[in-house]
Image 1 (tube, helix red, strand yellow):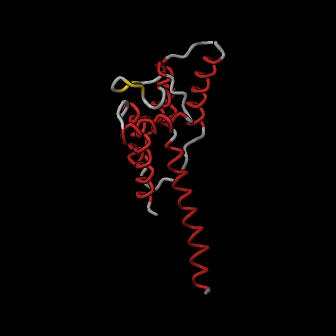
Image 2 (image 1 turned 60 degrees about the vertical axis):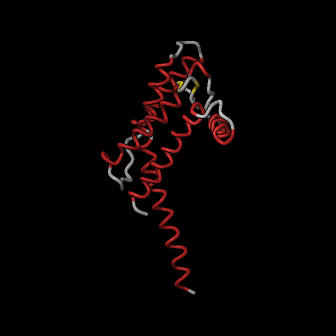
Image 3 (image 1 turned 90 degrees about the vertical axis):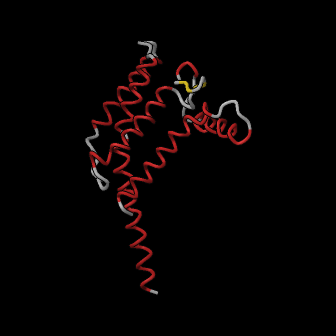
Length: 168
């Protein structure tokens, strides 16, 4: 599979994920299929996010399906996926230095840990900014990983299934 195709599959899933975040508030209070979409959105994200109202961005008077930190992670992730090919191209399989991932991850950890331990309360802004930091760097690891995985899978199937077809 071409790098461009793999990238657009990755981008498509990222777009769908981000659209689901606004389904909750956009369809809130409606019945039928749209009401189901709203409920599904909140339920789907409740597995990974606390969805506390005062820690969430709001849209059309309703909280988003995820909190401010998660929203920022996903939006920055989407932004980074969109700009990725301009910096790395479509076929990049090289991962950046691990430090570029660890530093924002550690900042998120400190923000959450200090709040949990009552050392320093985090704020709406600190949660949003730390979420955006980690969300922005993640695609630079996940997209090459997705490319590598796809290439390995393709090689495996070519090796194991084309050779069997030739032997019979």
